[in-house]
Image 1 (cartoon, rainbow, N blue to C red):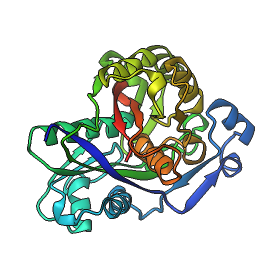
Image 2: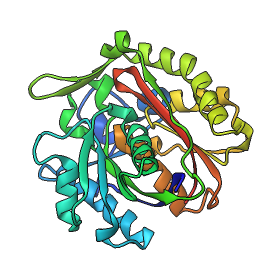
Image 3: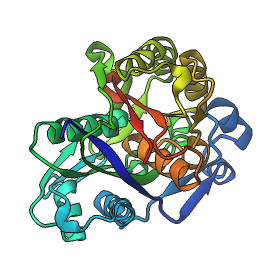
Image 4: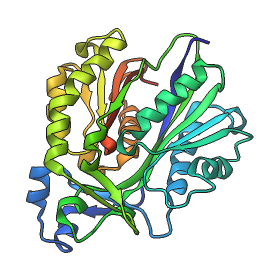
Length: 312
């Protein structure tokens, strides 16, 4: 095999929905203020006893069912998360146990909001190297547990959920080359620190970096895949903020693509946002099977990673 491709997707969101008017009863904000600044209307919040691995396993089970593979076929599980509290067993091992997988390699990756695209690249590289044949790649976050619900600048952003992909070996590559990197000296612009951990960010710094520096990198991702932005059928950026997603997509020049805007109903779900949004696009039939879709994550560490995939 010379590559890998995304065979199937799945996603999960908690039942509780918190709207902007609900937030306005908690902090000094309003529906108009939130929508005008970040574009979010609702977000899903996990139960107090609902864990990152529980949500990850729910999304993974759906992706596995959609793939037609058996649990025994999976030999690698990667979970991208920055909100797991427990260290061992890690989230990937807990997902494997919940799904009854045989003897997979299990690893967690913490690259914050760019976690899923880093994990997808890692799965692709592992499969290309012959060390795995079928992987579950999952982004899952309980961001609400790291949220300061008295800070109106950040509590309006965050949501919980999970998205998953089954990635398998393929003769014709369906996952393009990754372009990834970071800006370590600016890493403090997005933080989840302390005990208990709390999310904080320098919003204007992140906004300027994302809208100025990321479009050329996204175009490089397309070039590495042998495509132009006009060839894309879909663009799924990290669902951070509608005021970031729309200018980055516009500057990229993907004029024929469906642009994922799941942030409006899901909020910022960090590493879960890209697979969650992509799974919904595919489930609704908004992007044709086999069509090229740009995935591009960015955020904490000021890290970024992107690749073009062929839609399952």
